[in-house]
Length: 213
Ligand code: PRP
Image 1: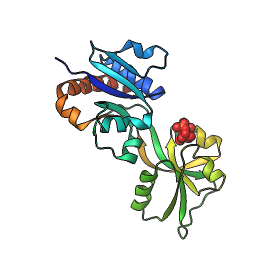
Image 2: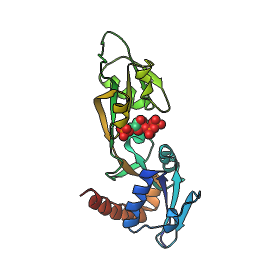
Image 3: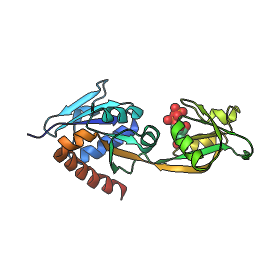
Image 4: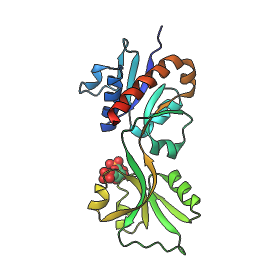
């Protein structure tokens, strides 16, 4: 008998795009499109059970085995380094992790740079690789306010369209890393449900290649 695959989907627009790919790949679960507050959807025929979770929590569910697989942004994987397998780049949810600041900002290498961010580890690793001394200010959202209010010199944050920076008179200075959505797997699940997961990855890969053409 085929084992059910438990899939952690990120809530929101990215999750909808991910589900569309899974649906095309043959893992449909029509009840997910009904607008209600349900969080778990399953289709015994296609062998999938979807959980809708906060995007930043997907990796936790997968790492701990509450979900066999999931879709998480590369930003989350780099920041929290969960012990999971990264199986596939879905080529959606594309954006980049950038250093940004006020247009007239000039870096004084003699001074410690203050950096506001949600992504403390990505920021630390990036500036360590540049041997630049920094003071990190951890924020949880609206990071763009920090340089405007002189809370920090620069920010490290996600830039997708660039609109948020532009509308706040900020600009990107450097790209640290490009980001996209990745299909991840729990390590034990990958071993014990290998046939099911491998087949799903194969079908999903075919569908996301088509999307990206
Ligand atoms: C993200 C990010 C930027 C914005 C970038 O914020 O932190 O603020 O999107 O997108 P853009 O380049 O297309 O304008 P999010 O909406 O996740 O909210 P946040 O302020 O809570 O981080």
